[in-house]
Length: 110
Ligand SMILES: C=C(O[C@@H]1C=C(C(=O)O)C=C[C@H]1O)C(=O)O
Image (cartoon, rainbow, N blue to C red; front, side):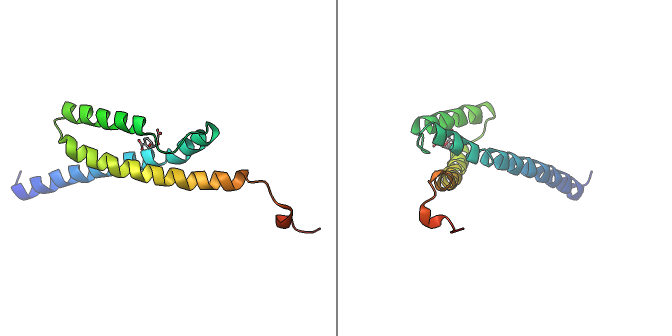
């Protein structure tokens, strides 16, 4: 195979892997609203430092397993975790609004 053809083949592999990475990041992020709803029902804070420490520890463990730079993996997880918390806060605001009693002034006169 020519080097040019091989380069395209490898790039196609990267394209396929990139799509899988984004798919998994999307799936992880899509769980944020349910987490927020569950925490709301359990009266838990959005921020859970203990859980984050576990996630980072697991990130280092898995990075070692795949001989991948754990600091890079940690940076990626930091971004995903911060985004997750932002989406949870958004969901929490929605839940708080929905759980507010409707005041008489909000009720339209018949
Ligand atoms: C997803 C959660 O909420 C937050 C986000 C986390 C994450 O994205 O991994 C971990 C802990 C929390 O600060 C959770 O509590 O499990």
